[in-house]
Length: 144
Image (cartoon, rainbow, N blue to C red):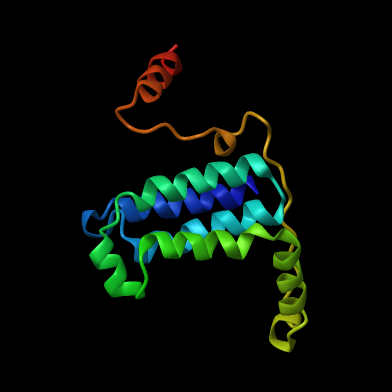
């Protein structure tokens, strides 16, 4: 799990280097969906809340008109649909089970993701808003 989240963050940082696509919902929507799916799969309420906070933070940068022209829905509709897809963990796990029985999916090699996030993992710490007091304090205390 640590490697998976590290890979996702590396991809996000790579995308952010290109100013024209920074905070672009076309690129970030899939990343955020994957993070929410993984946290739901492992049934980690803390990680789910952190990912939801990240979704709220990232979507605050998106332009409502641009988003609607790309996805034919508002940002709040997209978030509601996303949260609804993952709110019922049992239904989500059933979808995974049914999908794994599809012939093309069943023919794939099997892999396992090990949940190895330690309680002090950087992925389990809420991200602070840049420019906030919490962000400033975090920077000060990290410089020891």
